[in-house]
Image (tube, rainbow, N blue to C red):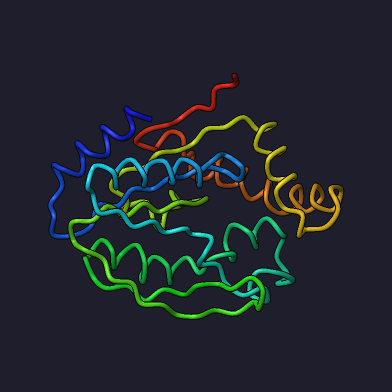
Length: 206
């Protein structure tokens, strides 16, 4: 973690302060992205850097736009779960251009979207956390990307035990097989996120 922090700070200090510095924490489901993001935020904030965290899962679309669309479920997950072009325009590009943001936030309980305005300081570090962040449409706006490379068996165990709202263990397993894991395989083959990330954190078993 120290190496990642030092690299982020070095790149941030060399970066123009006319716009926020954009850090992406990328990785597949269950890789530990949220935990690493919290650690980065705490450390950078303790060193008096202005930090704003964006969770890409806060900005998915309503269910009818990503389920029962006629496409394969993996396709719905990778291509339809987020409005990729809208987020490119309203999130990534606007941060890059130092413009104020108005973002769609998804409310799981009501399956509705509300809009929220977000003001960013041009000298801040914005940490964007989530899956598929290095997709072609978004990659050019990222100043520093850390990819979390976690073994499949550990990731699978984590996600199957953390999502009880998806029904029984068997039901969750089948959904992950049809939808999430195939979408992740598509990302790995299409984008090769490990190769193009600035830094890769490999999970080490203890």
